[in-house]
Length: 291
Image (cartoon, rainbow, N blue to C red; front, side):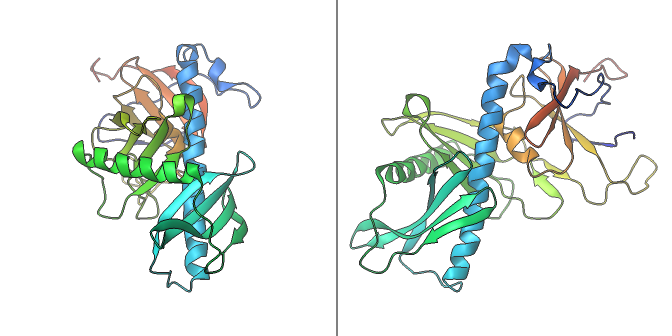
């Protein structure tokens, strides 16, 4: 079946790649992708991790509100997500201030989108936050100040989401600030930012992932003749990196169609879906010979 491509406002191209890779073939073995293998593996890993942390926070918050009958304790100050026993299991800790100390009010174990455990310590028996949780919270606060200093702007009036990935190489914590999805069928690709905080608590680096706001809008899509269609893919140009980033892979877990990402630096088009690269091909020239 021919794929209908949604063009991004930044650019448009018809994808004319080679045959799809076999199901048991590793997509990163594609010769065009080989020079970017390390960056791609890191982006795919981070994209999956951001997705899992985002899911954990979402489902744990819903459960916490239900457990508190939609009237949380006024001493609650927020949540922090910390690693669990397995790669896909995370613990979401809701914390608050009691006598000048941060303590746990509730803890939920989450595996992808399922609550698998929860505890709500009694008054007077609430444990102090772990050193890792305290460090993540401190990193978030520092990252927020950098977000303001850089004048990074979100692409929605709705409250932004954040994901804090635990310390990796050299003790760096990555804080992601994400423009939220506010409507079914519309997915924001712009308005996402990353700020890295070093082991010394200072900002190491920061970046945006797109220079403008752009939503992948799959609602009321029509073909060139104005007939309603259900798109199977969309195309978007990416200017800032020579390969898809962790944000592309993160969003691909939510977007139900294939993402055709055209990287202008090397004129490649990457077919991404559900956190995987399905194919890579050379970006064809436009009829005029220009982008």
